[in-house]
Image 1 (cartoon, one colour):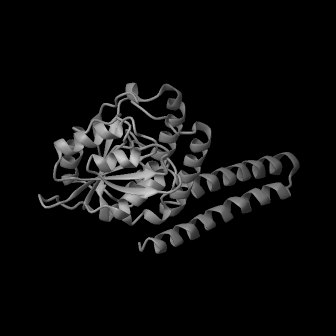
Image 2 (image 1 turned 180 degrees about the vertical axis):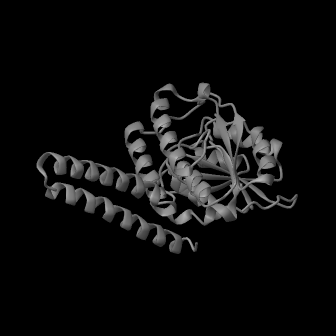
Image 3 (image 1 turned 45 degrees about the vertical axis):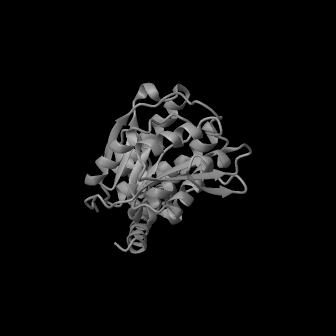
Length: 288
């Protein structure tokens, strides 16, 4: 999957913004000072303040949504409209250091996506239990360690990411889904340590319970698309194991095999066969 980067690669920095009038000017100013040849693309997601006007005044290219469509929807718009071959996702609220963009782009020469991995100290304490659960589930599906699965600061090749656009969500789970999708499709994903500053303005729109449940459902969806056997085999093994144990128990204690034992065994076998079918459909859909 990896393609060598060249000096001719155009870079677009996509800034999803919703009521970020307090911070977006400084973010754009720093980006344009450090990277005068990069395109700065702001997706104003239905802001009620002067975010869009300030961004235009600072020289960014601005896409405006009349209504708030969601963080993921804004990022997808940025992916579609970007002029660059390489895309950097970055927050507009002052948390990400524009100087780190160069580190991510440089690392992209050797892989398909680079994620700015935050240290545990830089992550909000209330989110850590949910993120731990998310990471455990994601690493099980991906079969590898993922230092930071949902960091909003990342660089990737536009051509690679556009392949996954149809099933990327419109909410905050887009970054998680994109990470898993690229890993499961054999893309090379690397991680660069970053530091994150406290949020300088605006208000976080993450809804911990609702977005957490959506993320877990999306992980299951990704598993079904890229590796359904990761779900079906454990469930089948559990049902078959319980069925065999109950069959042996009833055969010894009552010299009879109960209907429940047969039902458990058939359920386990049916789940396994359905998993094989889902795996074949997954391969056909992805052209594998």
